[in-house]
Structures are given as C-alpha cells and as structure tokens.
Image (cartoon, rainbow, N blue to C red):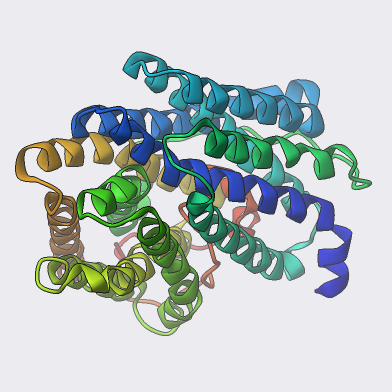
Length: 413
C-alpha cells in the first residue's frame, strides 16, 4: 500500500490541493452571497447551478478527455475554475454568479473525473479497494481543511477568494509534472432511468434523497450557520464537523452493510440523520458542531450504500447502473438548494433542517415500504466500497465494482 501511494503520490497530492480549494469555495460562496444582501432563494439558485454544472460535467468531460488527454484537460479545467472563481469575487450580479457557479461545477466534475479515472487505470482489482479507501480519506480530510480555511480572511474580502483560487490552480502542478503515464481514454457510459429502477428502487430513492440533502448541506449549510448567529470560526467548525462525521462513519457503516441487509442500514442512516435534524430544534446552538457531525455521519454514507446495494442486484456492467445512481444523486443536489432556500426565506433558518428532515422522512418511509414489499432472499455479492458525495460527480468507473459482473435477483429491491 505504501509503495502504491508513493507511485501515485503526484495524483493524490493534486487532488488533495484541489479539494482544499474546492472545500473553501463551497463554504465561502453562500456566506459571501449573503453579505451582498441576496435573498435565500437567490443563494439557493446559485447552489443549484453549481450542482447542475457538476451533472453536465459528468456527461461531457469524457469526450474532451478522449480528444486531448488527461493532463491537458486537467490543466485547462484548473484554469477555467480559477478564472470563474476570481470572476465571482469581482461580480455582484446574480446572473453572473449563476453562470460562473455552473462553470465551476462543470470544471470541478471534470477535475474529479480525470483524477479518478487515471487512478483507476493504475491498479488492478486486487488493490483497487485499498486505493479507493486512501483516495476517499484524502478527499474528506482535504475538504474539512478547506472548510476550516474560511477563517483566513473576511468572507466579503477579495483575499479569501484569491486563496481558494490559488489552491485550485496549484493543483495542476503535480499532475503536469507527474511521471505516471496517461491512461487510456475514459469510456462513455450510457444511462437509463429504467435500468436503475429495475435494478434497485431502494438505491434510486436513497441516492436521490441523499442528493437533495447533501446539496442543501454544501449549498446552504454555511448560510444556515450564519443565520443562526454563528461567527466565521464557528461556521467553519460546524461545516468541517459534518465532513469529518462522514469520514468517521463511512467505513463502519459500510462494513455493517456487508453483514446485514443493506437496505436496513440505509434506513438506519436516514433515521439517524432525521434524529439529528430534530435535535437542532431542541438543543442549544452550542451543540451544532456535534449535530453536524452526527448529521454528516449519517447522510454521507447513503450514496455509497446505494451504490453497493445496486451492485448487489446488477446483472451487467456496473458502470451503467453506477452512472444512473450518480445522476439520480446529482439531480437531487440540483433541486435541493433551491427548494430549501424557499422554505428558509419564508420560515427562517430553522427550516433548513426542517426541510432536510422532511426529505429524509419521506425517503425513509419509501425505503421501509420497499423493504416490506420485497424481502431479501440472498447474500450480498458485492462488498461495500468507500465513496463520497463530495467526489461522487467525478467518475463512477473508479469504483472497483465497475469491472465486475454479478448475478441478479430483482425481487431484492
């Protein structure tokens, strides 16, 4: 494992630097928009445009990589992301922000995809699981560090925008100088919503619900914390707490799902997140770091659990179904911030967790009904693999299951 990490260190260092800047801009932009006096709905729209860009990037970037290669695409996308972020720092136009955040989302999706597909080509199936774990931990820790860097300057200043942009553009250096040979072109994955629903309705419902909630977390979480009268340091701490919670819970929750019905673990995760939402209405704001930790720890594994459950039932290449689960998650992330911002605008900041809890309650009810209607009849075939919604919009083919084939039994929904 050490020799593998050393050989791929340039790629892992690039993604770590990239995600630090990415995490900082995710925490920064909602607060900066609020400082401009924009309404909750306008801030929600900018968040939705970012996730729309992520989805668009998943569908279009592979074509660019096939044309000019991984290194050129990565270099160009870091330049585009940096320019768009600096443009946001200069503008106070809502339309300009929507366009530039769409562009940032598109570029970030491509950057994740280039790194993940490249790493995927560098290992065989025997070692891919270890690399996925190392990559996931790297992404989550870097994301948490990025959230904490919110303290380095005032959110309304241009300096902090420059700091985020510097991290993103510097990420191109290790990739540009890497001795690792570029891999083959990224394969084009097709997507059929009917294939996803036929494979696993639980996975489809859970990934869509988790997409809504995680979209709200990254798109509106900093705004919620600010409206709850937290200072910048406290905002960065609560946002980082949610990411760290996801990192801490991801592995044990996944391993639990290898031993019991994965659908039940998905349901338990949703119930745990609902409990965290309810507690925000009861306890003091002093406990928000703990509640964000619990909320992130319960919500963030749901996407990976959905992928694993879909892999249990797939009867053909996992890449198509995995892409479908990814798109369901991204669609949820697109609509979530806009709808949640409407609730917050009319009902106040507490509506943030009220909306997230309501979505999770509906999702949990749907999962419980599906579990009752379709009993599990066989053991799992595909072991759980770590994945995170922070990097979900990158490349599903990085998942070790993408090259495996499984038998199917569609009674296990």
